[in-house]
Image (cartoon, rainbow, N blue to C red; front, side):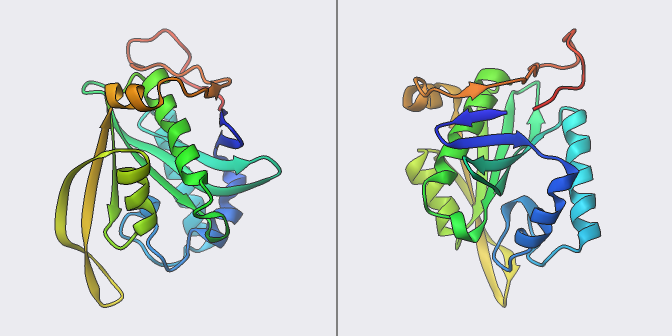
Amino acid sequence: MITYKEIELRGIELKDVETLNRNIGEVEINPLLSNAYYPLSSMGGEEFLKKKLREVQEKEGYLFSIYIEGDGPLGLLELSKIDWKSRHAELSLWINKGFRERGYEKKAAIAALHFAFRELGMHKVVARCIENDSMLCTLYEKELSFANEGRLREHYFHEGRYFALLFFGILEKEYAALFGTTEVAINSCGVQSKPETSGLQEEHAF
């Protein structure tokens, strides 16, 4: 578990599928589902989680439920597409409608960045958002000071319109300058930066 202020990032479990099915199928753009905009069936949600859990076991990514004290789960956060040689990963997050724009997105992202840079040894974390997702685009570029690294024009089609896909990135040294003194607690996370060369066990509890 990773904690920052009132935010907790907990390793996701299959029992979270009910919350996933109830909330992640909102018609709005969901970054964790890439180009999927439609509600998942219960089977679809379970298969989604099983796929993500396999990626965790193979050290290809990490998926967390986002909790706050006394409430949750209120969303999901993922570090995916981990490249252990070049040391970069992709950050995605999604918050339930009722909890958005209260500062939870930024706190959850800071906790995840701390984990990526301090525990996994990443050199860079990237993120992307659809141009009409003002919450995420503002979060990455304005609140977290990610650099704008590119734009794919008219890349996603949704509800009769095309939208651009925007790319952002932050380097470890940039994170250290901005948030290096942030107090983030990581418990029961024996995670190695290069699993193929580590003597640690392959399975870890979050």
